[in-house]
View (cartoon, helix red, strand yellow):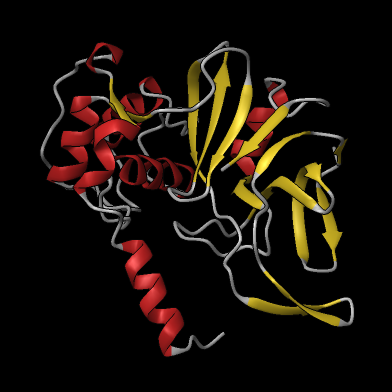
Length: 238
């Protein structure tokens, strides 16, 4: 789809990150999560080897879930790198250069709002999904929520927005892809009307959905396996 000038500008601004001021009160440095020596070598999508494995171990240690540390920088690792870049207020380019290594070295993590109990939190402004257990942050995932753009569906024009508020998962689709009128969703877990957390083959580092919260299919499988998208789970969107 060809982008308009306004869309290109909006996307460029989002990819540029929110700047260093994002850190402050909304991010939490966690050096105790594993102060391992980290190299300065730039790592990009498609790279492989011990440096990538080191990156993956550090991401997982800080809760930026990227699956098994296999030394190969693929889609799931890219999702985790985008997540840490968002949390640190860095450019969302998936390139692990000096600034991203420094954020990993400092143990930068977002600060969830849930101080007790368990929840899935979706921070729309920062495009992050957080899994919180007993008030402690376990996982931070890249997510893509409502784009804010207009679209036509069901005989009328609508705006792609993700509703804010506190909800609970009330319906789940367990058997792979669900074919919806707005696209395919991997194992969606619904928390309000047609809005769900679901796996997708496209999870860019900026808002791009019709209103759902997209994550990678691997991340959605992980949350299913660990019981984080069970019926009744609190979903807090803000």
